[in-house]
Image (cartoon, rainbow, N blue to C red):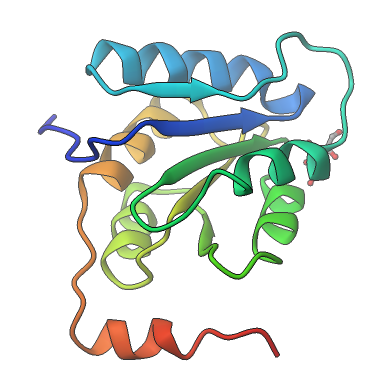
Length: 148
Ligand code: RB5
């Protein structure tokens, strides 16, 4: 696996369904010397995904990245993408992880813990954060992503 190029801290958060996978990803990122800020939850008690998406999104700006995890990833995606600075991508494969960065300059990776296994999730995380935005024609397109 090549090096993750992100130098800022990566923020991470989940709901109860994503709690175990969140901890696995935190350990993985730390093992790769990436700074991680875990915004919770700190146990598996039932919580509401919009609350934890909101908590993380507030930390996101240019060159600040995040990971959100819920059961399917759908609730987190809906909530995160309501915010202007966010380009959150619900990712289920390494190919999508790379394209989400190359074409969409996605700044939040979303995973569904009930539909993605651990190995796939770690490969997705690794590839998402080591892939750079291609700019060019894609820059013009993401500039058109305005609230309607
Ligand atoms: C929680 O049971 C579940 O609804 C949540 O994790 C997520 O999948 C919602 O989109």
